[in-house]
Image (spheres, rainbow over the protein chains, first blue to last red):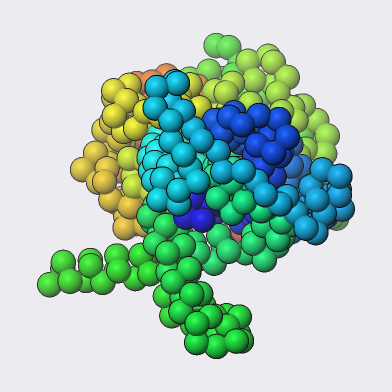
Length: 281
Length: 250
Ligand SMILES: Nc1ncnc2c1ncn2[C@@H]1O[C@H](COP(=O)(O)OP(=O)(O)OP(=O)(O)O)[C@@H](O)[C@H]1O
Ligand SMILES: [Mg+2]
């Protein structure tokens, strides 16, 4: 989940594009990976790879249309495409299992060049396996953010026109950001599929797409680690509230509204401000 | 001398208003050309047309004899036409260094590099500091752009335009809002830098003393038309120009 939020933030926090359809690529990654494992091959590596490729390509294709629009229209179109993917997951019974989803995605065993093999049926192993991916991806995203490409994306957030007047075609770079975000969302989905062992249309729906948005707002969008902290807080908060009341969604919503109003820079932004104030003393 | 920029019958209307009306402009290589005219004369609009920011209604724009009419902004820029904006148009939350870095990575073809830390690329550092030094912003390289004074922001605006290594710069009121001393200094600086780099300048400016002192030629715009053109001494006492500024043209 944290990975999904960080990938979303490459779009939102760094490029200034608010996508309401990130779950679509998460879902595509999850479905494709699940299907691969159930029907085609038991190799998890291959399943992840194919899942990520599908997610990236769909992000590229969908992004191609979305970046033609700006601001809220862009966001609405990502939402529309996200719902389309949801509809496909829901209706294409033969492949996706419709509203039941994919049931019984096997937990694969992975081997490293035939040398060591790791049985991911153990939740602990699975956890470490995902953790490694998470760290590597976070590292890669960190590299991207500080690369020339990353600064161009930040430039687009700050002042899209001036990027254009620096000799760069803004839409091209927005599409690149969109595809990269889709790629990492797809990876998160592919890693999720065997872990959850079922993949249902819920993971593609718009409520799912809202999660990375909320996580990022919660943690702070202009700090690289913000979304990661945000996703933590999000899940903690959700757990805590669920265990205390049946109407968790209401309380959860209210809490979020307060947090966003009173901490506009997210928790990280708040801590950052506090820190600079203390440092100035 | 060769002609670097030429517009033919360039026209742009906003509804009923003809903001730019059949303008024929011809700028020589190496020249400093001032475009003056009262508020609303159409100066900014003219720059917007040449730089591709606004689509033209009719006419033609030639750069070194090549037709660049209706090309997208980033392509026109690649031809070597760079511009600054009347209303400061920078990357507010990025540092001064990062502001200049964006056009630099674009120009040296590093824009798709997504692995190397941008600030550790020697060529990037070298090029960014070259620009910052020429414009006198080196000491402020690591300040966020918003922390700069108004004058420094205008200079940063110039630095971004310079970082594209243009052969022609369109400067839309490069000193708007500056104090008189700051204005004079900045204009001298612009003149010096552009002469060293052999950049042709087309600029707008409201301070007439400066316009008369540094430009080679002046074009006077009024209600979207060029009403006079010539050397400073010819323009200074031109009756139509004086009338236009006093608002007495019928
Ligand atoms: N995007 C636009 N839409 C509608 N009208 C516009 C637009 N841009 C400029 N105008 C109008 O066109 C005319 C010329 O404006 P322009 O900004 O080119 O003048 P200017 O010579 O730059 O003036 P100033 O000295 O105040 O900067 C003005 O009447 C202005 O109101
Ligand atoms: Mg103007």
